[in-house]
Image (tube, rainbow, N blue to C red; front, side, top):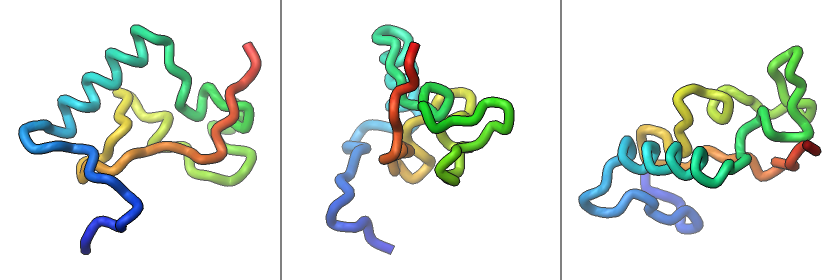
Length: 84
């Protein structure tokens, strides 16, 4: 199956998914990025679920991985930062 036209190739020649995920983890720590379900207003912590019905496994996984093994991004278009 070929990559859809709207989805760019995020892993360039000479890069690995593991290295890009490691860099993302470093960026999350350095810049306190919020991107996971735990940071979202729609997350229901007691049930470890999304109130909109989306799956939360990929964005709540440890260690943090923004790209899956195929190099495709994991993100939620409905993400809404929770109030601090």
